[in-house]
Length: 266
Length: 152
Image (tube, rainbow over all chains, first blue to last red; front, side):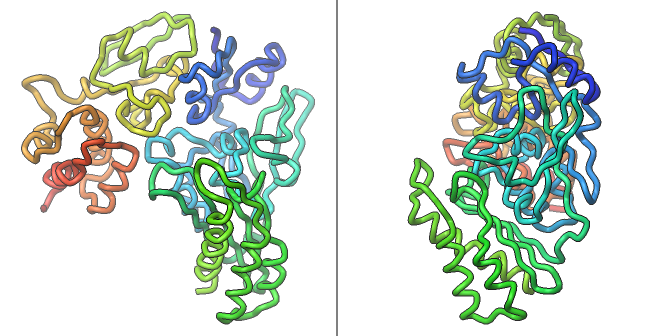
C-alpha cells in the first residue's frame, strides 16, 4: 500500500488523476470500519488530513474537512445541535462534514440541516469546480453524484439564513447512535418554514406539504401543530431494518418535527 | 513505507505495508498493550488515545496517516509506581472492575480535565459518552473524575 498526504486541493487532484482508484481518506470514521473488517483493501490512499483548504469555514461556507468538534461551536442552532449528537467526542474529533456527504447515508446527521437550508454542494476536479443543489448531489442510499476524479470541496449556505433553526434525532441512547429518525426545521421571520427528514427515506427528504401548510400559519395553534405533525409523518418514506420499524419511524419523525418546530416558535 | 510516529514523546519508525490501524501498530508492532482492541468500529472507546492532543479512537486512524503525529497512549499518562492522579483516583473510588475499559476511560478522563479542569457532572458524562464499560461501573468512574475537580 502507498499513501500520499498532500497539503493542497491541487495536490489531491493530481494524485487522484494518476490513481483514479485511490481511496480518499478524511476522518476515517466510516472508512476504517470497512478496512478493519477486511471489506476494503486500498492499494493507494490519498489522505486529506493536511489539506488546509478543506478546513475553511465561515458564515457562508463549510469546508468538507471541518470536523463536528468544530461545528459544535456554530452560531447556527441546528448545526451546533446536530454536531453535538454525532457519535461521541472521539468520533466528533475525527468525523467531517465532507464524510457525511461522501458516505451519503440517509442517516447522516448533517444532511437534514443541509437540506433544510437548501445548501449547495461544491465538487472539484482537475477540470474545474461545479456546484449543485443538495438534492442533485444526494441521489440514493449511500449514493451521491461525485465523479471518480472529483472530491467534495464543501457546502455553501444561503445568504439569508433562516431566523430560527432546530435539529432533533432519536436513537436507542443519546450517545453513539445512528439515527432512527432525525429532523431539521427552519423558520424565518415571515413564518416561512422548511422541514428536512433524515433516516426515513432513501435519502434525506423535504416534507413539502407540511412546510406549505405551516408556513401559512403566522402563529400555529394546537390544531395546526397536529396537522403539521400528521403531514410530516405522511410524507416520510421509512423502511423497516435492523434499527427500527417503518411504523415507529413514521410516528417518531412527526413527533420530532413538531418538537423542533415548537423550538423555532419560542 | 516508513512511518515516523512520536509515541509518548519517543520517536519511533515503523514499516507499514497495509492500511492497518494505528491501534494495531501500537499493540502488535510496539507492544503497547494498554490500548485495548475490542470493537474496531469506534463504538467502544477502549482504544482511545490522544493524537496531536485530540481524543480519538486509534482503531479509526490509519497508521500510515499518523506519520509525524504525536500519539499519547495510557502508557504515556502514568507508569507502574508513578500513577497519574486520575489513575490513583480510579483505584481509590473503585472505578475499576474487570479493567478492560479502564485505559480508554483514563485517556478520555485526562483529556477532559486538561480541557476543562472544572467540569460539571453533565460535562463528565458527556466527555465519557464514547467509552463503554460492560461491567457498568460508570458511577465509580464518574466519582473518580469528580474527586479531582477543584472545589469538590
